[in-house]
Image (cartoon, rainbow, N blue to C red; front, side, top):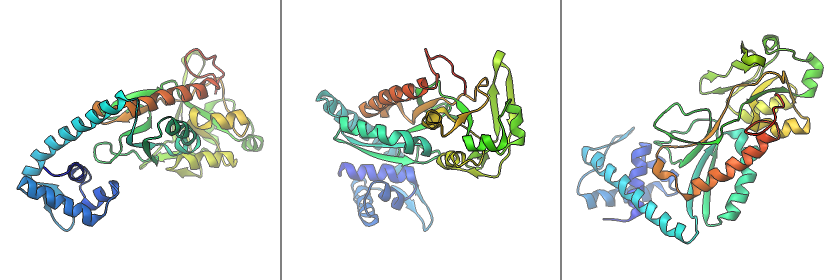
Length: 313
C-alpha cells in the first residue's frame, strides 16, 4: 500500500466532497493531491471516486475502502499517541474551532500557555461563530455554547455554569435611564446575535422565586459575529444578552454594567465537542483541563459557579 499521506488525502477528499478543498485543508497543492489520488487508485486497482465538472462522489469500491482507511488511520494515530504519551510528549496538529469573541479575548492568551507547555504541538485555530461540520470538515474539536443538537456528538463540559448576562455601557444607561425589569427591554435598543438565519431575539430570564420572563426584543443592529455585538455595546449603542465569559473583563473594568441583577440570564454551558470519542487524545484532554480551570476562575469573579456566592447579573 502507498504512503499514509495518500490515505489521509483520500479520507479528507471523501469528507470534503472536493479534491481541491481537501488539498487546501492538508496544505498541499491540487496537482499533488491529484497525483496522490491517482497513485492510490492504481494501488487499489479500482476507481475510488466518480468525477464530474461539479461534483465528486465515492464509487462503491471507494465507499468500502473508506471504512477500512478511517479505521486504519485511527489505529495508527492511537499508536503514535500511545508512544508519544509514554515519553510525556504531545505532538501533532490540533485543529480547534471556537466562537469569535471567546477566541479573540480569552482563548488566544490561554493557548499561549498551552503551547508553551507542549511546544511540539501545532495548533490551528478557527475563530468563527459558524458551526463547523465536525463530520466533514478537518476540525478535531470545537468549543460551543449550549448542548449539542446532535446527540451522537461527544460533548465534554468546560463551563457548565456559564450563563448570559444582560448588560450595557454606562453611557447608554446614562442616556436612556436604568432598567428595572426585563419586560422593559421591549422599549430599548437591543443588539442581537444571529447564527445562520436564526436571530437570537427572544431573551429569557429567571428571577426571584424562579419566576420566568421571556421578552421578544428589537434593535437597529444584528450581527453574526459575537465580537461585533459586544463592541457595539461597548460603544453605547444598546443592550446585549451575552455569555458571562465574554463580558467578565468588561464588567470588572466598568466598561459594561450588569442590568436587572436579580434576574438570571439563560444558561449557556460551554462544551468541547467532537464527532468521535476516539479523537479524545492527550492534547484534547489537556486542553479541557486548562479551559475548565481558566473558565472557572472567570466565572467565580462574577459569583457564578459551584461554591460561588451569587452576585446577580
